[in-house]
Amino acid sequence: MDPVTHALLGGTMAVLFTPRPRLITASVVGGCAALLADLDVLIHSSQDPLLQLEFHRQFTHALLFTPVGGLVAALLLWWWARGRATFRQTWMMGCWGYVTAGPLDACTSYGTQLLWPFSDLRIAWSIVPVVEPVTTILLAIFLRLALLRRRRRWAVVGGITLGLWLGVAWLQHQRAIDMALFWAQQRGDPVEVLHVKPTLMNLVLWRAVYKSGPDIQSVALRPGLWEEARLYPGERARWIDPTKPLPGIPMESVLGQDVRRFVRLSDHFVVIHPRHPQVLGDGRYAMLPHTIDPLWGITLDPNRLERHAPFDTFRAWWPENAGVLLHMLLGREGVPAARTGIKIRQSHHLFPLHTGLRPGKGHQVFRATAEAVVTGVKRHEQLTP
Image 1 (cartoon, rainbow, N blue to C red):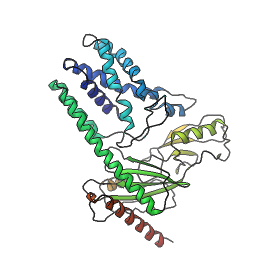
Image 2 (cartoon, rainbow, N blue to C red):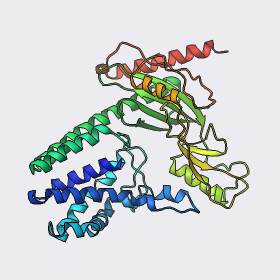
Image 3 (cartoon, rainbow, N blue to C red):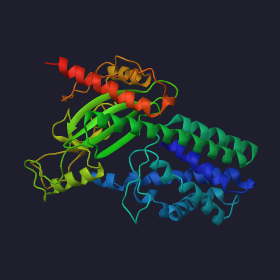
Image 4 (cartoon, rainbow, N blue to C red):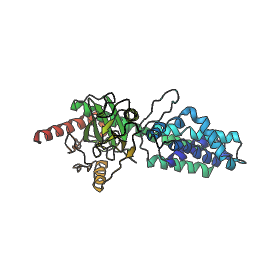
C-alpha cells in the first residue's frame, strides 16, 4: 500500500493500545514504525537487479520481525519520545505500528512473506489496490477524531469501519472470481491458476488472468454492487515454461538461472513482451485490465550469458487508453480497442454484458455474464474470415 495509508494504520493501531495521555506520541511512533518495513527497497545490487525483487516484502514484512522493527523505530525516535514515554513504552508503540505493515501489504496483489523464515510463501489476498482512497480517508478521519478528542474509542470505530470496508472488498473479489471461473468454464478453458485483482484506486473494475494449458488469458470484470455486472474479454498469450531452455540460453548459465528466478517471482505467469520481443514480462500486471502488456520484465541478451539480466519497467500510456479504462469503469458498451501494439489470437472486440439481471440474483448474474460473452465471441469468430 501507499506510505500514507501505512502511516495512518500504524498510528491507529498504536493508539488502540496506548493510554489516553500518550495518544499523540503513539500515533507518531506507530505511524513512523509502519513505514520502516518498506525500507527493503534499499536492498539492491547493481550487478544483480533481481535481488531487489527477491527481498521486496520479504523479512522486513514478516510477523516474526515485528519486535526488531519496533525496536528500530524506538531507537530512531527516542530523541523525540524521551520525556513523553519510557523507552519500553516507545518500543511497544513501535511494535504495534510495525506489525500492521505486512498484513496491509498482503491485502494487495503482489505477495508478502508474512511467515518468513518458516515459509517463503508470498501471501496475496488481492482485495484492495496499492492505492485505495476510501481506506486512506477512513483511517485519516477516525485517527484525527481520536487525537482531537483524546478518545481511543474513535480508533476502535475506525478499525471496525475499516474491517467492514475490507469485507466489501473481499465480497467484490469473490464475485469477480466467480465470474472469471464460470466464463472460463463456458469457453472450455481448464483453469490451472487464477489471479484476480482490483484495478488502481477502485473496487469496481477488476483484472483476472488465468493459466490454461500453454496459454494465459486476461479478462476485465465489473461485478457491480447495485448495477448490472459486465465482463470484457481480453487477450491471450503463451507462457514461458522454465523447464525448457530458451534458444541460445543454457539453463546452467547466469542468464538461464535469472530466467528461472524471474519465473518463480512472477508465479510462472511469464510471457514474451508484445512490444519488446527480447523481454520476458510478468503477465499478471498491465496498465489496462484486459490486456497482456507487462509492466516490467527482464531483458535477455544471449551474447551476455554470464551476466545478470537487466530489470526494466514498461509503463507506456496513451491518451486513448484512458477512454478505454473509463468506459469499463462506467460499465458502458462499445469500448474502443486499446492501444498496446499487441498481436493476439483472439479478437480485440469486447463483448460487455447486458442481461437486465440485477446483482441480487447471485450466480444468475455470473451465468448470464458468461453465456452472453461466449455467444458474442462465437458469433464474432463466425463472421471473421
